Every structure is written in structure tokens, then in C-alpha cells.
Length: 534
Image (cartoon, rainbow, N blue to C red; front, top):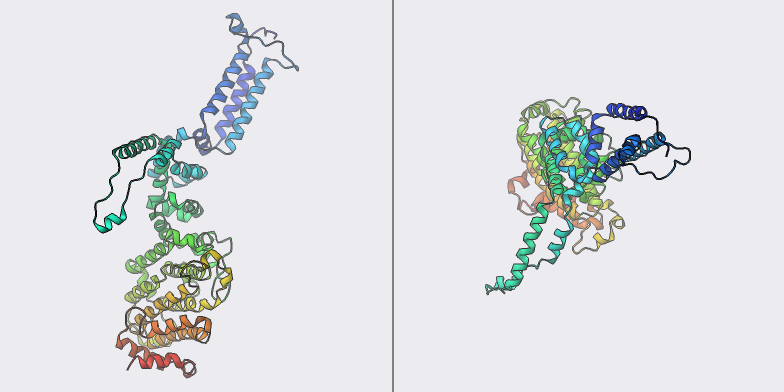
């Protein structure tokens, strides 16, 4: 190699200046994400490049002290200056490729955890999401990962002997050998020690816990970053149960949240009563395309409790919904958390019916909604008799009765061949299971309505007419005979607990006020009702 007359660091300083300038204009979040993704191999590449550059730049000085080793003359027209440029270019390309998809390095998870806590305490939620979201898959993997040695110890550890028969008989249980107990204890202690050293997994769990259990953060995420919440819910094994409660409560609390938009844009039918689920409605699709997802997360509980809480505690809403109906049925309902909860149940139960779900998905929350609405309602006035829905509360009761009746009728629209064969072949499978449960719920709802002194006689007649017209559509269909019988039983004498004679008399009084044409179409129901009074 040819020696330079002097050491020229001008090109190196120029390149380093450009790198510093570019680094300065990169957003702080991007720089931080990159720093947290740097691994030991990355540091090795950077340090090797750093030493190589200085080795070439200070060639003359190193020759003087005998520390420079020559590999022969430069080839292809290169010299030390161009070699420095190529090394820096290669390192720049390498770092650029790494920066395109920075993944959190295991050794940096502890630092990342402290950063998340700091952002959480200072309520810099948007900044927190921008940092956590790209790293979420890695955090979820780390939080669930068990080191190989821990897995091996768990597999090798002898299982304790549980002699069920001896316990049931009250006889002495078999004793295992001392050697076996010692091995199990030693391997258990070894497994705990290995897991204690899994610092990355422990801190990853703390990050997920901090994100999913902070009410203020979840409330912000539900409104501003709802799809980030769906990503968390996509890994239910890593998220605590209260997350779904906080998420749903926050969605229903903010009347401009995404759930209200999706419900308003989800009016198209996919059958007689079942609503279609377009892919653009991502929250509804996430939970209801496969309704077992909603069941797994306990969505029914989250919705039901959120609605019940508002009916119990929101006095301002109660006062508002006891006023005249106004534009509620046309506009106001699309911003009403109670109506939103009712519609979410409507979609969920219809999907459960058509997907052959053998779980009532707690449709009985409708009975609680009815009770709480009646508790909050004002007493009827003379003017109420002249209106179909005198107040928003009347409209909500109408929705509850109509939707519950639709669940019952929808049993005739189920295409059994669309239900997965594995589910159809399960022991005790009943394609009408949910519709039968809906008859029980409707019976309880009608008892509350018929006996309520707060409701007008006109509305009681209207409510019974809605239910009986749905019943009429299934009464003469042999396929739905069981559901029709359950409907009659639940509405008149009760499914589990026998109804009181006072209720049956009140029901007969309401029935007699129905249109005579409808009454004559229901001879079986009328006979059962009359017989129940004797």
C-alpha cells in the first residue's frame, strides 16, 4: 500500500458530520426505538467498522510504531480514503435495514419497562402507544416464553400421586417414595430458579400488565387506538380479564367512540333479522365473525355490567330519558350507551344462533336491563296514552321486546349445514338452544312489563302484540314446535318458577285488548292462557 504524505481526516469528518446531521433530524421516537432494538451483534458490527476505519485513516502512525499489517497493494483503483467510504457505506446500509423493522432486544426489555412506566405516570399515552405497538408481538412472545431448561425440568419432574378412589372411600392414600419426592422438589426448585433468571420475560409481563390494567390508559386507548386494544385481545392468554371490562366501558362511555360509528353503519340485514358484518366494522367483526371469541373474552359480561351501571348510577341520563321522545328514535339512539349495549347483544346472539353456539351468551342481561329501566322510569301520565313511545325509556323497552322476540323467531332461519360438522356432532347439540333460552328471557320480561304500574295499557298491549306476532310465525312450523311450546310455557306459567295468578290475570286482560283477528289466529295460546286461570 502507498503511504500518504500526511494523515487526512477531512473526508472522515465530513462523513461523520453527515451521519450526525441525519441522526439529528430523525424523530425522537424513531431514534429511541432503534436504540432499544440494538443487539450485541449490532454493536459488534459498529465497533468492527469503527476500528477498521481508524486503522486505515491512521495507517502512517501505525506504521511508525509497527502496528500496521499490509495485505499487499490496493486493487481496483481503491485507496484508504475510498475504503473508509465503502466501510461506512456498508455499515450505513446495514443499520438502515435494521432500522426498517426494529425489534426490541431482550437485554433492553428492563429499560423499556422503566420507559413505559414513566410515560404511563406522565400520561403521555400517544407516545407510549407509538413505542409499544411495534414491539407488541415481541413483548407477548417474551411474556409467554419459558426457557428451554425450565421446560425440560417441568417435563422431567415426576407428577404427584392423586388417589381419587382412596380419597372418596376415606382409605389411606398410597405413599410415594422419598426419592421421587426429592427429585420432584429438586426439579421444582431448579425450574423456579431458571424462571427467576428470565428477566426479559418478567419485565415483558409487567409491561403488558401495566398497559392492560390502567383504567385511564385503557379509556384513552379505547377511543383513540381501539385497534391496538384488539391486538391485545387477540392474545387472551396474556391479557387480564379486567381489560375487556375497561375496554367496553370506555367505548360505551365516549359517545364519539368507534363502536357507535360501527353500530350506526351496521344496519344491513343478512337474513330475516341477522345483521351483516362488513369487514370495515373491525371491532364488530373481531368479536362476532366467530362468536366464540366474544364468549372466550366474556364480552357479554362486560357489555351487560357497563349498561347496568349506567342505568343504576347515571341520574342525568335517567332524567333525560324520562322526557318526551323527541329525536331519540331517529338520532339520539346512535349516541346512547344503553341502546349501543342492546344492539351489541342483538348482533352477538343472532350470530350465536346461526353459528350453532351451545351457550346462551347471557342474553338474560335483557331481563336486568328491563328491571333497571322500569326502576328509573317516571309514572305514566294521561298524555302518554296517545304516543307509541312517550319517552326514550319506552323506546328502549320496545327494542328489548322486539329483539328478544326476533331471537326466538330466528330459529327457523338457521341453516344447519352452515354449522361446522364438529359442532353438530357434539353430544347434546341443539340447534334451537339459544332460541329456547330466549323464550325464558321473554317470559320474565313480559312479567315485568305487564305488571308494571308505570307503563301505559296501550304499550303493554303493543309489547304483547310484538311477541305474539313473532310466535305466530313459528307456531305452525313443525320444525320449531319445541320452541313454540317453550314460548307458550314461558309466557304464561313460567319456565322454571311458576308465575303468580295475578300476573296471568293481568296477561289475560292485556291479551283480550289485542286485535280480534290476531286473537283468533292464536287459539292454542288463548286456550293455554284460559286454562292457567282455572
